[in-house]
Image (cartoon, rainbow, N blue to C red; front, side, top):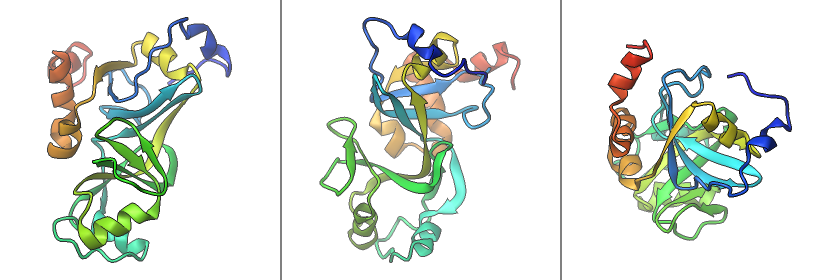
Length: 200
């Protein structure tokens, strides 16, 4: 999408900043950026410096089994090898990030919410591989990032809808059901929204 020159976002920051941490961003049908078309993004951090999120409904053509093999970690715990790895966003796509519940105690964890953490250290994958814990995880390559004021500006341009996040949608629903479920939580039917915008 066309973004204003760097530094121009600040004029859109209100005197009472909105904190969208632990919210979903729902891409509007007119989203021009192919990285985010038809995506559901979970915001892990949002403050005056900017925002960080993970796209939670775009599985890659890669399984956890393949990822563990690539990084030379054993994956002995049953039930994980066939789980997909996700495109988390266009920033640092070579790095892995783990959304998980419960938060636990890992070397490099951002506590998003009392239930949910985002960890980028290898120790959590070692625990998943050997013990199957934490059992509720979403592993992504890359993340979505916004500069200070950028997300607020994009929302003001109707690029996104926002709704408080429900961890159940992330960890319990299959990826293709997550966006419709978030829309339902907002009281909007994505199919009808897409039809209005001229997209099937």
